[in-house]
Image (cartoon, rainbow, N blue to C red; front, side, top):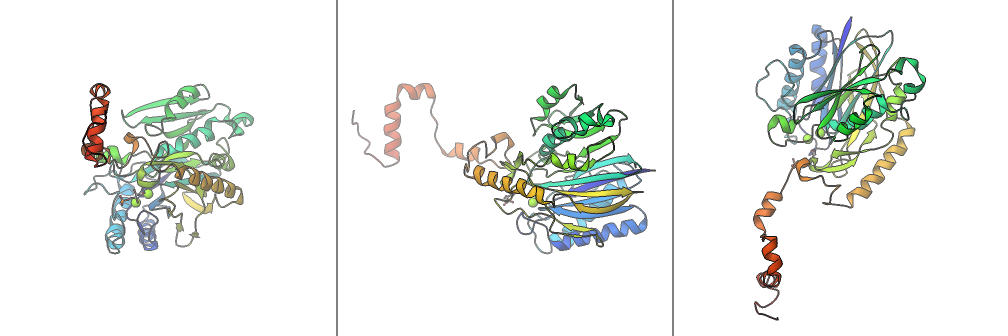
Length: 400
Ligand code: F6R
Ligand code: MG
Ligand code: MG
């Protein structure tokens, strides 16, 4: 039997601002997925948030990009928007639902999608990730570490089943091109691309010995869909672990160092990715309540839930960053947060203009005067005199 794991996630309203989600949103979403489970459309499900984003995790046998599964997610997000987000006037109600009518596939409509159809192994450990206040390229570095860096993943060196390495599918989101690069042979080229995290995104990873899917990352750049910047595309990902894949601890080790990612306040700042615990997990209601984004709307955070899949059922979740060993990472991320915040509006804390969610630059430029640099060089004193006079600082007279 082939099982499909689908995660479809969206920001459909924050409580308050862009900080968190309202618990009633998670409850209504879980209710709708429970009904879909009863109808037999999905095998199992779980609903959780990190920050202001809600992930709908669903397992089924319908394959990837199935209209009924995507439709279920779309309708659920719509209803939660109407009945909860709009009712409570939550902030940005329905913000990621960019289109009016559903046409069979939710990709390109605003929500993020990570899907993987797999043949369940005799034992199938799976980790699902969700991050807020960042972009899909935030996974580039950890995906590299997990599947290509022997200093992170010991198995690449000492497990014969992993020795052949992994194949990376990289998407150029600007030119809409795909690159397939092999680790270890092509790692210099791979790094040459994926170091540019806003453009070349690791979308999938496959095990080379048998082509088995190893990881899937959501890559829908909202700004490219909407034609204008509508927010960083807080990403989700699925990773399979153990038995010829990185061990659970090797997957998580990739997050032990809080690397800098783009996003954070107004989608326009670089900051550390902080691995976070969930506040609560209700395995009965199939709901987990994740991180809040409060320091400068962040810092960017990631949650990891661990599952054992059995015939499509999700045994779990286990909150994988709920380990004192990650307290140090959180502490380090908090220190980096404090350090980098002091740069205020200066790069590299503030992103370069082309990566910013908002830019006031055209308005600023329209308000202030500029002069030809050549002409200015010749008449510097006159220009300065005029500027001082207009500011009312000196009389418009010559002191030469
Ligand atoms: C970043 C984010 C927040 C908002 C900020 C301003 O992705 O969601 O940092 O950008 O709170 O929000 P608006 O412009 O909606 O007032
Ligand atoms: Mg939001
Ligand atoms: Mg968000």
